Length: 150
Image (cartoon, rainbow, N blue to C red; front, side):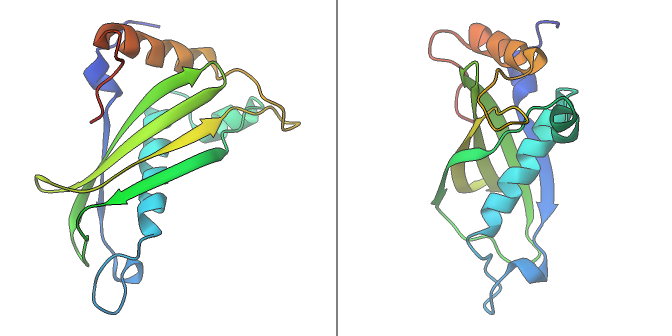
């Protein structure tokens, strides 16, 4: 594993709000932000070279054990949004993903999910070394406080 700069651990993903994701007023239904968090998280993992599918094939699953979302402004139908995703290693078996959903320069939502690594029998196991190393390098480069929240 190379020492990737901490900034490279921020993954940016674009989504456009579809009509089906809104209510009658054209405002995004609150639960859809968690779907967009998953899109950001999946893209972040894919960028490490270790997709969800590859981890599951290797016998590691990452169920969500905690989820939080703070709504600041509403997204609306046809908005072009950017999902910013960053990961922090909490323990060798737990990972936290932080998210920020932005429209132009305006933060609409911030949130996080925490995941536990489980083996195929549902027992805790270590995260794949590649992911632990990548997050560990970013934490080392960011200093004792760890990577800054988006």
